[in-house]
Image (cartoon, rainbow, N blue to C red; front, side):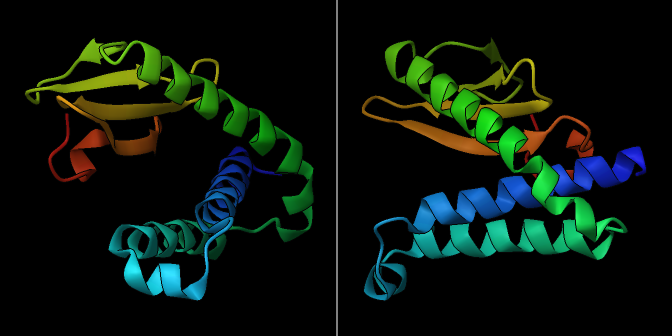
Length: 137
């Protein structure tokens, strides 16, 4: 399997696991009522579709389910760290925006610390060029 296919498979698994997490315990009425939930679900499915379009190794999808659970656990740990220490991570060029890496995985989270909440602005794979992302930090 090509290295790019492995990355794409991980992206597919991550996006679909995110979609499952977003919708857990939610009803169709919740989806209709919550614009952010609907947007997050659509975007997760778009990520999976984009990665699938370029994929040439469909039989290997199941092999990455375990790895995606490990990444999910790391994301949960980072989000808990941010709850306890909101200013964790490095400052970026954008005012009030900080960046934290999901070491040992190639992902990062950009977040903004407000007076009453922490907002995750972006979750991305580090292989993606930040110059292709509007409002990049």
